Length: 487
Image (cartoon, rainbow, N blue to C red):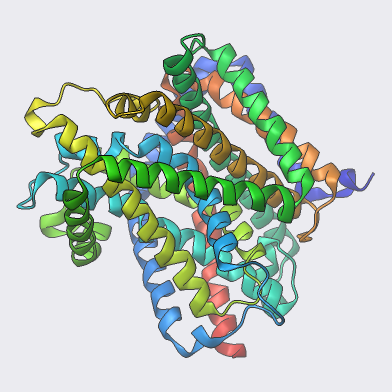
């Protein structure tokens, strides 16, 4: 069987099995080791994440405005319409996370600002939300995707990360290491999102129907159900399962967004949106590098910014490769604008609508009673306070469900490509293998984290993001060298 002759897949499977063994047999000790290792890692490398994120944004913007921006990623017609393209990259990149944080994160900054500011409370809260969900995460995704798209469509290489190494840069062991790290990073990134999102589904079901207890067993069964449907979607292929589900996600998300906007503080939402964007862009450099008056304490960085940058880095391989897969025929400039700007603006609008309405329901920050503290239940509590609450909660529950399936099926598809020598149409057997492994890994993570799932996920991602960031930096350097020398 060819699967058994694939060293990248075999090593990745061995690491997965080793992790699962430790998770199931030594959950307490393993969890303690992960927590201490993550803390030590951030103490040493936390600032590196900030600088990496900032410079990736700078590189992407510079490429878009440079003469290289005119280069096409492959010949022939564009693979997907602009609507399908944006729908797929948006659903895959952030969909489930936006449902988790729509209300909870803006409210946290509104009631517990990370530093002193002369800005209005609502505008300041949205500025920090935009910072964590805006240009930097999409630059991580876009940079990885651009590198892969350039190699596949411009240099006729495979979808493997190691295909960046050729000629003088090629080394078999280094190539194998890069591919294994990329696979493991992808796996953990998706596991984190699925673990958190499945718990939000349970919270939503409990609030709507009152029949679902939020227990470890129910969480595991929910992951199994999600993973099965996502595997079927990935098995159906890119153009049928994944594209159609992504289009549905965007349509339903727009319905929730417009409905919430029309029911809420419409003028205040627009004011907060434009003021938040203006402040974010003006303060982007000092916020990104944690400088001068924008400086926040290390506890905030470790709980929020470092965690987010590690999360986005861990997601960059699978999201980036998926974006590359659907971007054939576009210019580098169009690719960067489409990946960096359009999703960021959509995310800003999303948080402005939900955040502003939540601020209005709370009143002043001093009057907040903790209604939206729950990461998993905050959006359902929010809709409880609006007209047609049951319908809105049901629609949001469906959207969490479909966003999660889109993230999982995209990850299965990308992991299949990684395992099948970087082929754009991986064998069905690889899709089945990764569908099973994603489910098993997520259950293992839930078993480690239990009631402290977010902490466990963040700690694992922090550890995984460090080796991947080294791979990412190498890929960027070789890509820029190749781009300048060959063009």
